[in-house]
Image 1: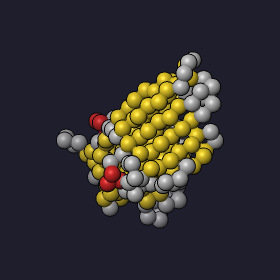
Image 2: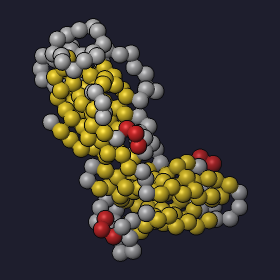
Image 3: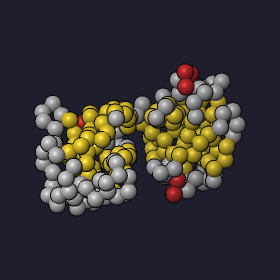
Image 4: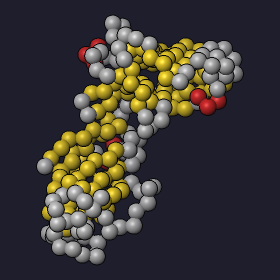
Length: 220
């Protein structure tokens, strides 16, 4: 089985590798295919930390998850999920005893643009994100917390807490209005568009200061 995945620089992704019944207690392995020989990146026998680059999490039912953290351009390439055919407590070092169950082609993209916005406590900020007209019918979103994407409906204002959002398909703009700013609003936001299994986005670094309201147009 071969699949294509796309990710952006700095992103963390997780993909699932399913295995057949009978391999629940067998060692699971992640390999990478480079110009040279195939080599192991991690296995379910390794002691793993949430700070590691490659993390394997085995359900011991029918699949294991592979997480790749803080993706860089160098992480693009072909990865292989595997299961040891014979149970062993040793770390796998060769591929001769491995059944490969999934091939992942990872393409790494940079975000289209990253801009910094300075706004002011107790004031408001208005952000315009432009996107290509060919994507005007695609779903848009705003993201502050990496684990939460706030969907935006087309041609109507959506209110989420104190953030108002509007996907203006006629102008090709995603409009974001944040009112009554506080220090807690200082963060990195993303306004983006969903494209198949990928996201295209502009990163907005909002800095809170004292003074007047600012207006920014962020384009992608």
